[in-house]
Length: 349
Image (cartoon, rainbow, N blue to C red; front, side, top):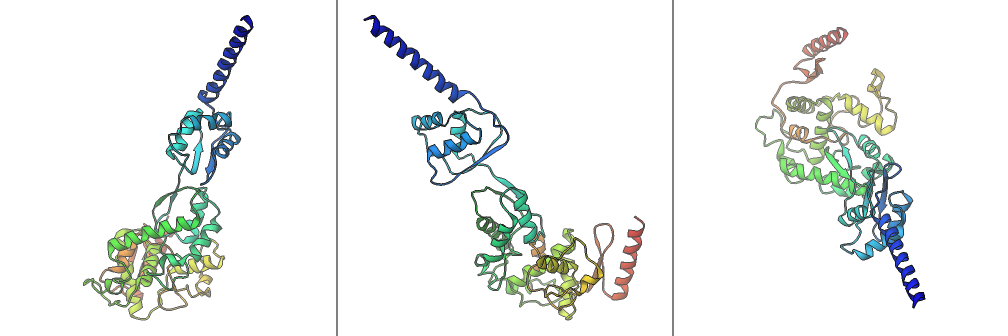
């Protein structure tokens, strides 16, 4: 009888020790050695997830995590990217994975960004190589085939906005999200494949008739307007200058088109020089009359609306005024005076 009691006592002590060990591992917070992230992909087993957590220094014991999961099956562990930087115990970690408290990377796309700049922003946010995003933007043109059947890339349709992405999403999915945002805004302002042909003509205030403009041309014009001015009230005037030039078969002479041409060629050095005006490219609007072959950036709502509804004006020229705005002119003589005034102002700074 004494042996049985001793044996039961040993069992009780062992059970208490095991329970203490289990709850110590379960409830004692662990601080990751640094900010740690793990990717839980669809199909990962609980043991695989526990192993990932242990390897990243997020939990002490993977077996305790697995056992706790099987004891408390409140839901499956959700796929996604998780970020851990604060002390937490296994219960806290498990709860986050059951609730799908995934980590998102914020990507801010300013108005006018090119697909090259967007790709860099995606990479900077930690979502993958810029080259991978560029590949998606330059190949997945089926996303806009109904709007722009001849599109050679998604340039112009990657709408500027603030996006929340995670590393479980592919570059194609990120690009598609930006195109969806473009479509939403386009519908709101009446820029669709069926209405773009008459959008400009229906504006009674416009000084020229561009009823033949389709979505591709409107977006291309908007991308130039976006690059030329960040001042909202100037956009319709800038658009009017370019429409007036088109109406007279004058070259657009848009500096941003040269920058874009050199970006496409991989030769842009961060500044334009006089010799660049002769850069050989269909996107160079100094050498080639009319609109460039496609958008030179991704315009925001204001620029799109300006391209659809330009101001009524007799202006053919504009130049910066050294204070963030522009001076508009009807004649070359007046324009030359504005240019001279700009240069004097810049020398005086």
